[in-house]
Length: 104
Image (cartoon, rainbow, N blue to C red; front, side, top):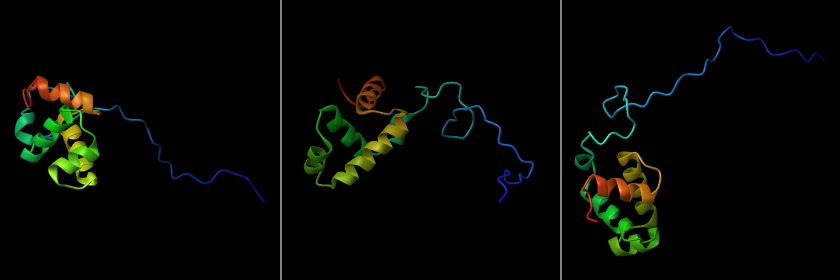
């Protein structure tokens, strides 16, 4: 049995440079620009969850307080992270305070 490499189609995969895009799809010079109207893109419920996150409650505690499932809280949290361009609760709270979405 031969151990030759499988034939290639002549196509190569070149690495592409990452270029962050704004919500409109155009390239962005700053990935987390505070110039965009973030507060208009958060729903009322997302703002409510963000306020409770700022209070330091766990997902289970938030779910109990808002009468929703824990998975729903996680969904809201992920949506908030995406919309604010952050990856953690601490970053979300800091960004929300900087944008005056929640009080200090």
